[in-house]
Image 1 (cartoon, rainbow, N blue to C red):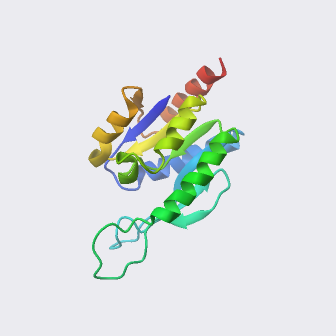
Image 2 (cartoon, rainbow, N blue to C red):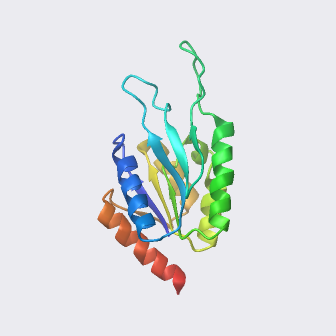
Image 3 (cartoon, rainbow, N blue to C red):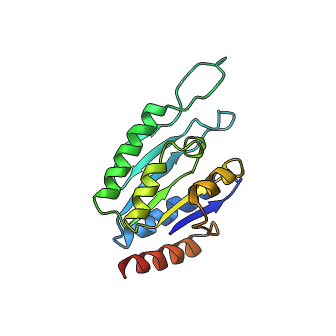
Length: 170
């Protein structure tokens, strides 16, 4: 019940996930997770984006403002951990689906949303995330062979999630 979209295309998976979340919520499905609200602007650093915690949580910038000449990681780990805590509680409160905008560098190192993914899977909640080529090996190691690649198409994702939710109910 751990699905992933494998993509190097910037923006496409996020648009697809946002559409899927909207359609699930319109059907009354309780969705926990994280989706991208604002993509980086042209010429901006790829981490300059805003994320929203689902179902109705806070939005936050994922990158720290370090200044023009700064180097190194710009990830705002405190903001990410606040998002992790919010989403983990949403999973505990009865989410039916967990959607994560990206299995990223933090998760590849065993941090970030790893425990929340495990919590959702333990509870029988289907999990869907996006994995870029840089983190694919780490994701597969984390998943331990239970992962399933899902095409980045709303109908395919919705069918995959529906089948997994049906399995969880049995």
